[in-house]
Length: 309
Image (cartoon, rainbow, N blue to C red; front, side, top):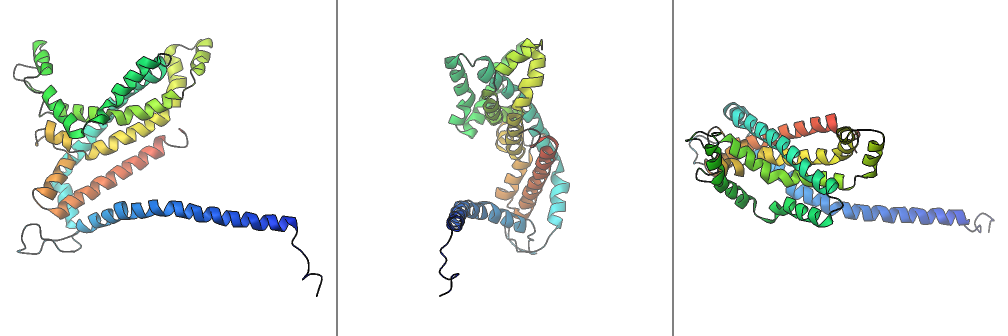
């Protein structure tokens, strides 16, 4: 028997083999953790999107009954959808942008008050935080219905606005663009405020004290210290608010007038469930999804994430 055949493995070689086994075990665990999420996305995201895109190209055979469509490659569905409904599409993004800006202003103010100014007053800060997230405890539809009552012609708000002559005697708030944007702002306000609160809650207030020691005014300290450190929350909040607000249809349905306040989600709902025009509704949904994706990518490229996080 040769000397090489009888040589025992060196301790370093045993350690290397053990590390390789451990690395393989970690790899198998990683794959096991990824598979459920991947399958979930495949079943509940990729497959529905594929069906949606396929449906957007379906065609209705001549003489077929309402709601009967067959697989085809009818690209003209997109042309019809955009030519007929480009106004509600643009209006949706306009309303969503206005609601996002309003929610950013209101949500940032509330989050700053709770997370920074009232940090030492734990009880009061906790109460305000509960008030901030309280809308999550009730139904989205019920909250919107409540806004319809608040802004009704016989409500307190309209009466006061008429009394101070901001509204004419026959003026109203419901069934207007103001009501739709107000509903969007209120309903998505927690999506904006909570990420900002999470960023401000981690803010080291000693940095503000140091800025004051260096003769920075409160506004300068806010602009140079607080705002940059809270930008991750602002970035997340704007995305979480703008994306769902763009496709929302509940606020436009309950608080709007179905004419000059109609949003694209309302049109899609009508085409799917009332007119039973599945291809056009699917084409509108695909267009909405692509435009939102492009806007989000442009937003991330402009303001995220490397410079902010």
